[in-house]
Structures are given as structure tokens and as C-alpha cells.
Length: 123
Image (cartoon, rainbow, N blue to C red; front, side, top):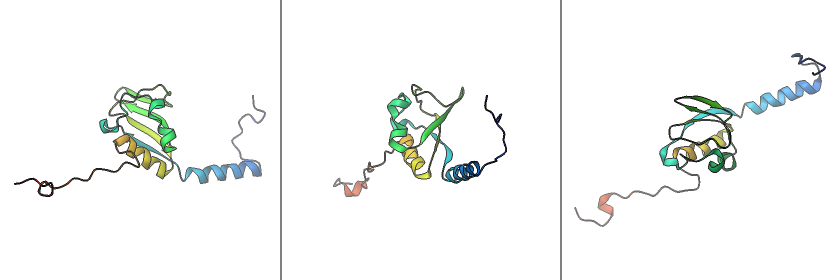
């Protein structure tokens, strides 16, 4: 057992500095819930196959489904359409994850839609 018996008082300068650093870091990190869309192409894939951490830098910390919440899901957890995926990360990381989970991969351009009159067809 630890000698300080998990004393909750902050006694040393190092402990105070560590706490300040931790609090400063937490200002840029939040927990976000993103619903997995069928358009994402990730439904039916495991977390390992989805490579969300690799692609975004954000971490999946929970998955909520009709049957309950799975905290700290295992890499073999299969993603299902409609899953609410709980992620932590910086705002930019979460935005990339949101695009992936909702069906729009960063770097892909959406195909422009042309009005019927501009397509060369006759009315």
C-alpha cells in the first residue's frame, strides 16, 4: 500500500504544478457523443478496423446502445449503425471524428450537384 495512504491533500510544489498542468490540458479536451451513421461505412467493423484513433487522434471511451453503455470498449468491439460513440479529444480531433462517423471522410470532396437544366438534357 502507498505510504501516503492516498492522502488527498496537495503537499508539494511538484504536486501543485502537476495539478495545474492537468487542469490546463483538460480545458482543450472534452467528451463528445457522435452517432454512427450508415453512410460512414464503419457499421460492422471493429474499433481496430475503424482506426479512429489513428485517423483522428481522438479516443473512443464509451459506446452507448439500446442495451446499455459500454465504457472503455475493447478493440474487438463491433460498431453498429446508430451507436452513440463517446470520444475524448481536442476540438479539431473531434471534428475529424464527427466527419468520419457521419459519413464524410476528411480529404474527400463532395461531388457537386448540377441542376437538371445544366446537365445538357432537354425539358
